[in-house]
Length: 225
Image (cartoon, rainbow, N blue to C red; front, side, top):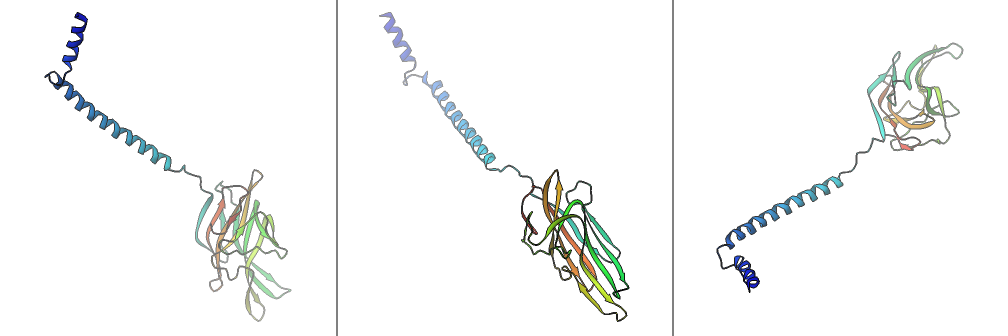
């Protein structure tokens, strides 16, 4: 009987009809608030985790750009360009005045020159291609061969003597925001690029707009990308 009575006393202590239930009710309310706060915190963590997963990992740029700031190549001026930012000049643009006594003509020539391990495509007429925007630039160039250590005449003004008759020659003489393909070799790998240029015959100048070089080896690119 004593064991049964003791059990009864414990049940009476938690009976809803007694005043001793009030602290228990308050504890239940506090516990409910804690559950809501815990749920809110859990949702915040979950949403934060989702946001973090949705943010893509930053990718290195696929092209390295050089703003040439519309630099003007006129008679007697030049411009060197470091395409890959290694501190070594890769391309040189300059002019040259030539007198041809036998042919009785004077030439003002605009050159694109490349150094060792920097290439431009050259055809059998010693010309470099003039590309439109989005034209493909690849390791294999139809009708052209990639050469380094080059000096290619882009355009030239020819003055006939003694008549002083003048005309322009060269693939680039009418260029307007068009592209010269280039290639830099490093560590046995080829990195393709382009130089955007225009030509102004009236002002007798070559205008250099922008250059770019792929940061991914052996990757075909598009002019102007």
